[in-house]
Image (cartoon, rainbow, N blue to C red; front, side, top):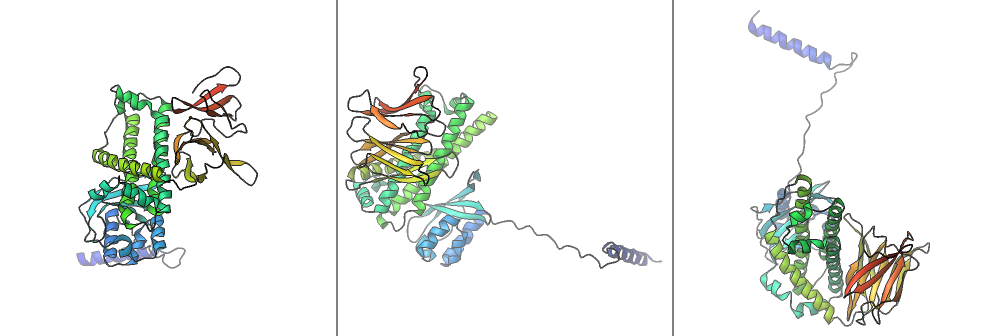
Length: 451
């Protein structure tokens, strides 16, 4: 038998054996499964390129590449892509993609670039959210021209905001949340400023914290990050049909919240790495911090002007937040200075929130002390409204109690707010000391102990 014949015989035997192996109990051969294909979802850059291509053709299919909240807000406009996003001159494929950041709300990344548009300022950043559909575009960052930055501090901008009820409402909510972030920072780690004034660096400060102190700092970071996200979301989705002259201001306002959260997130991650591994890697946030300082100063100045010039509003919105996970629980209320007390109850008659008007600091502009969800909020009265000055957070034993009332203060013409904690062990007193809100407690059984 030749070599070729031998090979053919072996091949035939192999085919017979394979056929026999493919049969079960004399039945038909079991068909082999097809090749499995693993589809790798498009990268953020590929999604951005696809969006740009569809946008160049004014194709509404580009809306399908948007994350649900942004897609829904765009759908409400009922306008073609060019009217919503403008016409891009060309996509910048030489930008910088940041690392993927994961938190309780998902995985995100951003693509920093420069995309010129025929109408409107250039796109300088595209934000992406990872969903079941893959990477979707969550938002855009716009270039803030110097001319716009200069105009942010002008009285003209403030007066235009006063003429727009929607933007006036939103800037008050944003300012209150920024004040909330400041109060949170002061209450949870105000000793950081004192430490740095004495030459102690942030890494040294974090390394010296007790476990309880570190956890308080970490939770504060999470809460502040969530509040900044609320500011960004409301500026993105709640402000529609803004006057053309205010588009730059709203873009700067949105960018301020984004950068604030980005800087806080990078510092938080560096802090965690130091705590866990003993290694400090200083975040590269120099440019962001300088830009953020300008945006913060401009926004705060315009916000102050809006409050000073507004002499017609009869109520002031307040967005109360609670919790330590994104998104925070929220409740929107309207503070009415013409009512000594405001409250809301559920169907069972249980108090949901309560606002008590009381003069606490002697300036003849009564304060508003609000209870909601186990927290107290102190809104300091001004000539034209309110400004959040102090609040508690969960775990402070400041739950609502029937004795929540005002009593005469040591300062002439002023009153304090007092109540007994639900545990019945302490009586709490919210007062002013040297112009600063202070919460004191008295142990009902034996003496007093100031917190």
